[in-house]
Image (cartoon, rainbow, N blue to C red; front, side):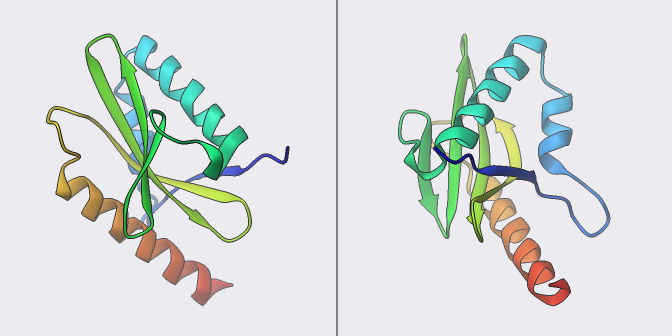
Length: 119
């Protein structure tokens, strides 16, 4: 099976929300998340709940739990077999916060816009 390419979204200014998120995690959660990213890389759009879930606007969430902590990494698919991870957060409520989905949508729009204008 052909692997997917995993890319971290980076703003024009060089900010990388996913990297910032990963850098603040403890080792157990980080290990768990990296394992999930690896699963996503291997299975891509075949990865389903409970690991991955479609939200809306082309945005998906990678679902990770470690003990009582629940983390989410939002992502989208782009041309070919590329998956772009946009942002991550520790989940405190039942629903994924709209602000995080909005953030992922903005990252996606920015990414696609820059991709088409720069070829």
